[in-house]
Image 1: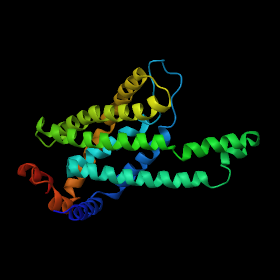
Image 2 (image 1 turned 180 degrees about the vertical axis):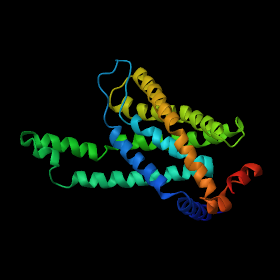
Image 3 (image 1 turned 135 degrees about the vertical axis):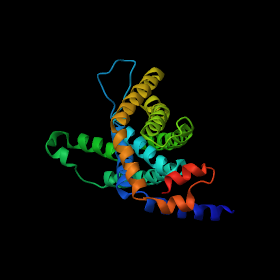
Image 4 (image 1 turned 45 degrees about the horizontal axis):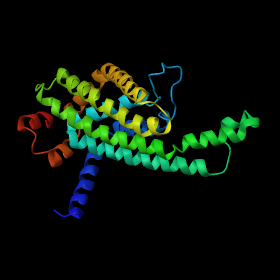
Length: 260
């Protein structure tokens, strides 16, 4: 298969996947990924000197839960593809925000403080534009963690073979432990360590604390995610993708369990 044919097939597969996954989940995932850029630009103050955290951890658990939901129904390849789609939307949004920051004008927040109009506008423009190193760090961390989450989630299916809630939470929680620590570390060392002056200790502790918070949120919302997957299965959501593109290396009994 030539590179062109492979690319054409990938585009067709992605289009089929986006038709198969309910649009609400895709919209929620894309919104989460876009907002993480803005949240990650704010460091949290008042923490112990050995701990560094930014506000991005408030949202990262949501994208992990979306990916786990997709992986449960459609497999790890589909989870990665929808994550890459969200990355593309993120880059488009970052570009549009950069254009908005370049356009001359005043943000509404500066109107209440005319004495500091220039400083406020400069600060908001820099934040809204999501300076290049934050975009670089968030996109890189998200792509790496998406691969880790998808394949860790799929690999853990061999630990609990039954298709029930216990299987879902073992796969979901286990993959979150690994992928979110990786995500936090990659972002912390690309952005916080290199540009914000965090120490290695702050980066590692921040990655660990952020991961634990993200896991806690996933624990709380896993029943909701599992109910979504069950409703997809009950209503034959995604049958087109599962029939055409589900990987042949998946055990046939598992495949038949998904495609009902």
